[in-house]
Length: 335
Ligand code: ADE
Ligand code: ZN
Image 1 (cartoon, protein in one colour):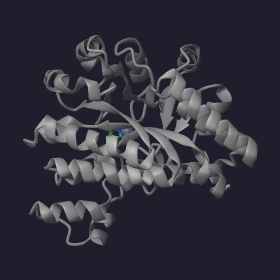
Image 2 (cartoon, helix red, strand yellow):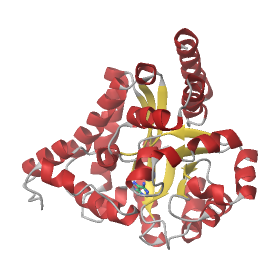
Image 3 (tube, protein in one colour):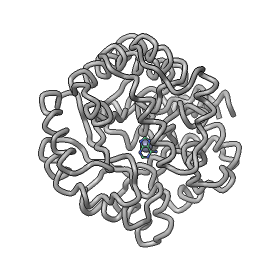
């Protein structure tokens, strides 16, 4: 099974590039930027990676992202992730980045986007990994701040496919960002949002109806509302589920109780993703491996999940077809 998963062609649709910053690289970048960290060693830092809830994690995650200052830092961060994609047979990745995490500290939007997008373009050429970018608004900040970010992004619109909504969910409902999402759609960005990770089902309704999202990030709590589940199925909308993130942030107490298989059985279109792999104990393949073991998923289930990852990506029709055929050949030869 592990071998089957490792070689399975797949896409990753929910990945925060700042959350892929491994402690070793974090230390190396801090050193070259003369930043003093609160932790003396990589091991000491890792002991802080134990979380009670989303906010607990976000506090550490924003601290970690604070070492990123120069274009080269964003390049190195993204390149390291893309190398991991290549080694896991992730053929395509839809990468979220949080510009406000950096612009709020005085780093220019241009520095962030140039570093990330250059690494993506090199990865396409040298590693054969395809990618696109999702600019995420931080929901703990104001809608006005998101509008400012939208304006900053416009000169780089050709490099960005979608907008997302992340950070502290509780108390920051999708409705807070209705206007900026409307404006983002007008600019040609595809709308997405984290919803129903810690927030209740009504946040998912809001994201669907007010933000007009095309894919749901997490969405676990849709299971609280049968009508919502049916609506998501009717709209043929996928969920980007992140098993190891869910247990790390105590959204789910144990992978044995993870609702992923239940979601699939209900007819929901589910994908498997790593969210913030440097913080949650595993890359995307580790998420596949652990959820397979805990829920006894079959090769057919895994094939279904990988198929959804291409099917519900924002790739163009022909590229999607190309990857889907590659996946089908793999499945036929290996099951
Ligand atoms: N930012 C990075 N990871 C996140 C998550 N899992 N939920 C909300 N915001 C995030
Ligand atoms: Zn996320």
